[in-house]
Length: 485
Image 1 (cartoon, rainbow, N blue to C red):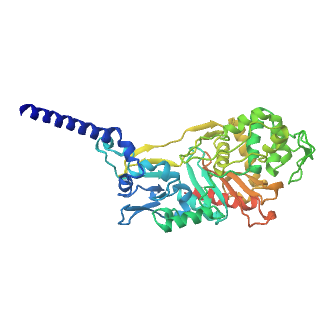
Image 2 (image 1 turned 180 degrees about the vertical axis):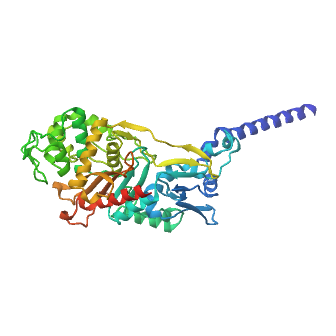
Image 3 (image 1 turned 45 degrees about the vertical axis):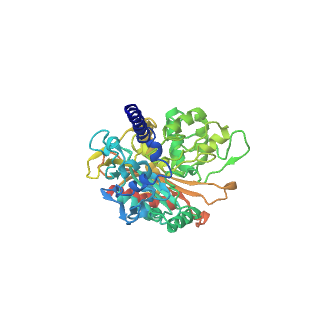
């Protein structure tokens, strides 16, 4: 009898040990796998069981959370959704997250370990902290000036603070309301289908995810390369560029939209936007030095993040001389995001020191305690300081005496460069209108803002669209707002 009891006890002990081992296996070894199993809704319910942290502009929230009383309790809401969609992105219970809602999701959802009161607190307790906040670098007045200036036309604006790299505005139009995608159900799926099918592509972030041929605005980059390489030593001296100019190795003549380009100096070529001079200078600089120069501005960088990822701006690394000539005036396969071209203007404005652009100033707990603080850091030395000084003078001349007069602001030093980029089969598409610029207030030691504007208005007549006519007034409004702010 005693022997049977002992055997039964041993069996029970063995079963208890097996039960404990199985519990440990499930709770420790397989915990992450079970947590992320698509059939497990507990994490999703917990994720939406509390309000999401907010995204801030000028210290004020542009997002919120609404208690729906449903199983997925809190839905994301947006204030001025279309205005800030290129900054916030969306946070959807159906389609996930994008842009800042994606890159800062751990903070906003409360799962970031840095939000916990003690190290490893979340791991030990498996607790979720209240969602933290994300303070952006965007300035409301600058963002609104860019959005209103575009007026719903297809296009984008990027504005930077040259001395720091802070993104002051990031606008893409036509835009959309991210709140339409926040919840679940047929209304959300219908909105998703409608937005993605729209010909105007409102969910495309044209400021950082769309690249365009930059046209004549790219001539600033080529001019920097020519000055740094010593191909041009005196920007006011005549060049020996012929007009008409035949692309090297071809019988194709490169036209100019302006008169007076034959043997024009670099400064004059920038002022009146001569294709021939800058194309010839690009060929003289040579492919290797041109690639090195443009990559200092950020071209060909596949890893640029602000923190949302930015599409690569392209400058080919293997070209014939005729292709290099066209690339040097922003054509052929040269493409750029509006943010990239704002970086070009920013580098000139900041004495050649290009700062890394950033959109998030800091993240905080719900109570406001700082979790992470971002700051200024150098991205590249884009050009020699003397080259930057010379380019600043040329860009000021463009606004005061050249094609960029529509960007002038009374009493303010403004530098700019127009661009009208051809595209489409045999260049039959309506040209894109570009303008890049910077502005410095009276008495200020340095420029306060650098801007890039692109307008792709399919409704405009070909003769009516130009960087100086369409894009420069928008840049002027954005710069004026930044100087007032």
